[in-house]
Length: 472
Image (cartoon, rainbow, N blue to C red; front, side, top):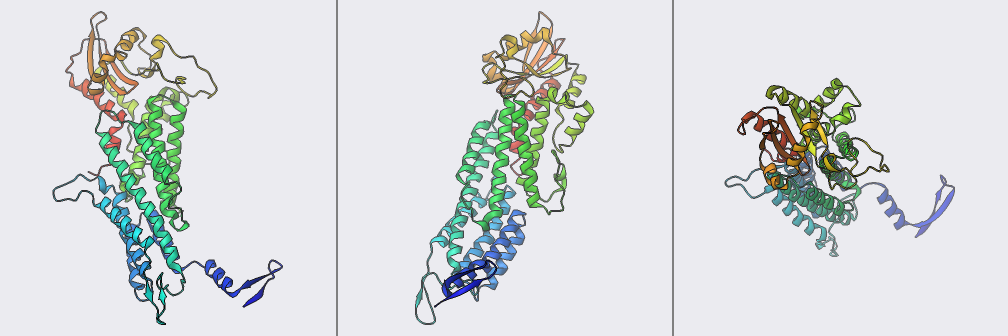
């Protein structure tokens, strides 16, 4: 049977069948299951995992009388997923293995969910209706005709999300493993997380999964920008380093706007709001890592930044980084106490493609490649006057490839008898070396000097920043 439906609002009439009208009306109003799932996953995006689990179990119990078996199974999976997500965001999968402790309960939980959701996505049970006929997809719950097909589709999307989580767990395992080495290979980590992000960019894209898709995207994007900032700083590139730090900061603020209520204020470039925060450990770590990298940036490009502001403004900006370090103040204090002639960070520019030197340069600007001693600029010196008379000796030691391994492993000491100067060196990055100069003969075993240089080196390498991912 067909009839004309007058659509006076649009001034037209359309002939449709009753079946089409029913289907259209069903599509206009969200199914009960969709509304419930949307609410549950919204709690995931605000880290309210306990609330999500509680509501999922409550809905599952209420639907036992009139809900489909698939719906109840999916709710059970969502409850388990809330538990796994809470453990993931608190980095429980990185907890040191103890006696009688399983290899990784978080990984095992995700693998179990992967198997169960995969089965639900493909499962087609046969039910016998009251009239004796058979139904392949099972009885639909009241008010949600044919909803099982949508639920199975959602299960297939959730399977892809679970697989993405397992990939990220493997990534963080690699981060922790690398943090115990002398130098972290940021290019390898960047390649890993970029690959995970690219592979999953089109996955679990169903509108109902937007909350978890958004959080996953923020996590990957922030990691990518933080790692890229480290690589750019290793090559002493001001603008790219700044842009990646700013992008990480912007995405953190955008994520925070999702996590918190609309009334919550936006946080500054170096927020200290995490001091007594109930937020998950991984989320807090992103803020702490960003603050640490901004502090490192403020040292490597101190001369450029200081030219744009006063020393008081610089101190204020650095102090806003919360748990980060004021490297300049630390070096100044050491120089006064140790009576060092100069503390320098030396960059090896030879062989660096498109090297342009300190500060901002227009992309189209052509800068001639440095030669000789100019290939080893001082990216930071304190006091601010570069020790030009000693620079040939410094360059000779820094460029000596026979010292490479020693400079990475320990503080190297040598005494120049001709001028009566003592030098202490340690390699911070593959192309950056810290050099401390004294006008008198200093003992190779001077613990105050050696400890300061080595501690500063380790801080600037940022291994500890990444090692801090592992729960204490």
